[in-house]
Image (cartoon, rainbow, N blue to C red; front, top):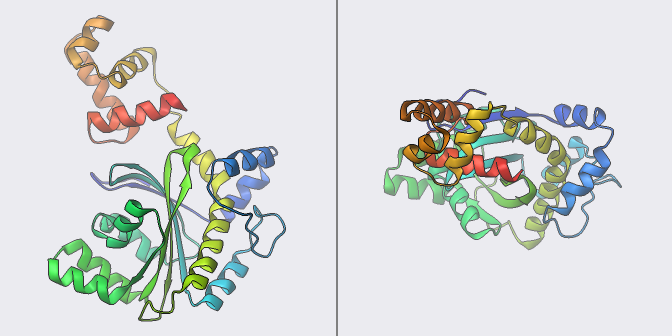
Length: 281
């Protein structure tokens, strides 16, 4: 889960992890209803179970194949602008070898599918040949690596969705890929089926991700660190923080460096952003 500078911190989870969390959480029904109220899902989604929070991944696989898809990638992202700070990624329905390289190489920064769905919020149908053509034209190394890996994994076309998790302040992306080489087959019916499966996985995963987010954001600070952080969120410069707390400028700087490490961010602006989110929570 450790990350190099600039790379997101990636936390992998599985169906078994979600199920174990559900089994160990007696109050899960109330939590799931609360989370469901904060997720834009439209009508109730049923994928082989009467309870939408019960999910059979074997049935998901079967429905994917029947609809023409071979993989489903699911990730929930803590972001600042276009930078992914922390990613919670499902490992069961897509090749980990592709997903690991996607984050290690920060290919999402040059992924036109990711950019388009983040900007528009609408489903994006895509075709590998077009991504490859654009990458060849621009010479972008990340885009070229993305296209090569998509081809190596037989991910030749597909559709990507941006879903909502407003209570967690996360961006959620779900992508389904196919071995078919054109995107003409991805009609409204196929998109609807893909969205139904995506929402089912999303609703199933949300209670587990919510628990992990609470754990990650529960950074324990001493009183002085809390005081520095609170004033940092207010936008005070270091000298004003030092004056207000009767600390040396060096001590304030040391606290800020420690806080950046604790929050796993690279600069003061990112620290203030995540700290403000923590205070709201």
